[in-house]
Image (cartoon, rainbow, N blue to C red; front, side):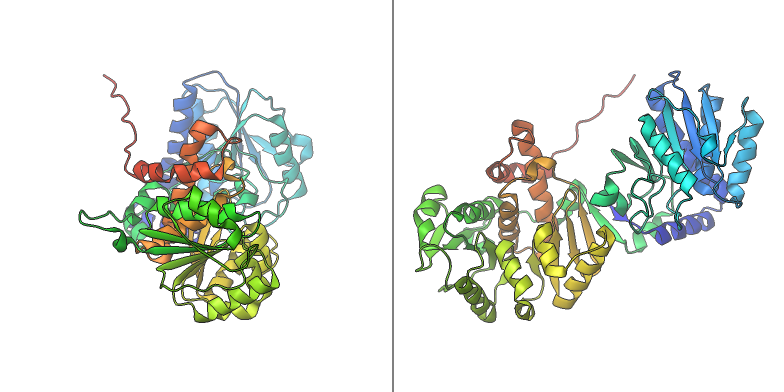
Length: 511
C-alpha cells in the first residue's frame, strides 16, 4: 500500500475534484460520512456523551459534518470551535452554518484556557482540530487544551491524524499532541503512524477509502510503501518441480567468538529454514562441535584461532555472505574483515560487529559491493551515520548514507524500515516479543537465505523483514511476548511462508 506525503495527498484531492466533477464540500461530506458510519456502527445509538473539538480548517470542517450527522441520529453532542486564528476555510464556514441550522445547542467557542470544558472518562472525544495541514507551532492555550483532553482519558477518535502532529516532521512539543485511542485516516496510511516518536500517539489506525482518483494513485510514485501480506506475497518466488539444492545457492555465515557462537548458529539455521540450498558457517575453532551438533544440516569451516576470527579464507564461491554476528572487534578480526572486503565478489549482508568495524574504519565503506544490505540496531546505526534530532532526521541521514555507498539499510524497530536511496519500505509484521537476544541474527540468516535463492537484495530485504516479523507473530501465539526466544522465530519461518497464502476467514453472511 502506498504512503503519500502531505503535498501528494493535497494533489490527489485536487485531481479528484477535477476528474469526478465534484466540489471540495462534497468530498468533505463524503469523507466525514465514512467516519460517522464507523462511529455509528460501534455505538449503535448508545447514550454516550460526545465532545467534538473542531479547528478552523478542513479538518475542523470534517468534524462539523460528523457532529451534524451524530445530532441527526439522536446522539448527545457538544461541539467546540477551537479559535486559534482569525481565518476559516470556506468549507468549514458552510458546515458550521449547516450544524447551527439543525442543532438545539450551537457550537461552543473556545478562545483561551478559561474556556476548557469538563470532560469525563466515560465520555467520547472527537478530535478534528488540526489535520495534515498543520504548518506552525501551536498557541500555548491550544497546547493546554490538548493536555486537558489527554488528561480526561476518554476514548478519543482523531480525524485523519492526531492533532498536534505534522505530516513530515516531529512535533514541536511532544505533550502538545492528542493521544488517540483510534485514528481514522483518509485513503492512505501516513508515515507518522509507523515511526517511534510519532506512532505512539495512535493506539489503533484505520484507513477509510474516500474515493480519491485511482488513476492518480496508481501512476504517482509513493513517498513510501507499506508492506503487509499482499505486498510480501507479490515478492515470493515459487519453487519448480524439478528443483535441486544447487538451484538455491550456497550461503556462507561468518562470525562468532568465544561465548558467542550461538549468534552464528541462529543465522545458519535461519538461512536453511528460509530455503538456502546449502549453508556453511565460518567460525573460530571453539565453535566447531557446537555448530556440527546443533545444526547437522550445515557445513562448518573454522579459523585456526580458537577464540575469535583472525582470517577469512574460503575455497569456494558463495552465492551470498552474511557476516558480523558475534564476531567481535579484535584487532586481528578487523584486519581479517578488511582483507576479506578487498577480495570479496559475493553479495553481502552485514550485521552487528561488522557494522561496528565499518563505522570505525570508514575507509572500508568504498569496498562494499552494490546493494550490500546492512542491518544495524539503533546503537549500531548511530555509530554508522551519527546522531539524529528525530526520526525524520534519521531517515534523511540513512537515505544520504545509502546513496553515498549504494547500500540497503534495514533500520530495525517496531515497524522496521528498509531504505534504499530515496525508497522507503515500512514493515507491518512483528511484535514486542521480538526485542530479544538473537532476533537480529535470525534476520541476517533470513536475508542471506533469500539472496541465496536468487532474490535481488532489495526484494530480499523487504520480503525477509516481513517473514521475520510474521514468524515472530506466529511464535508468540504459543509463547507470549516474554517467553519468545530467537530460536522460536527460526522454528516458525516455514509457517510464515504458509501464512502468506492463508486467506482470511470469511465473514458470515447475514440473512
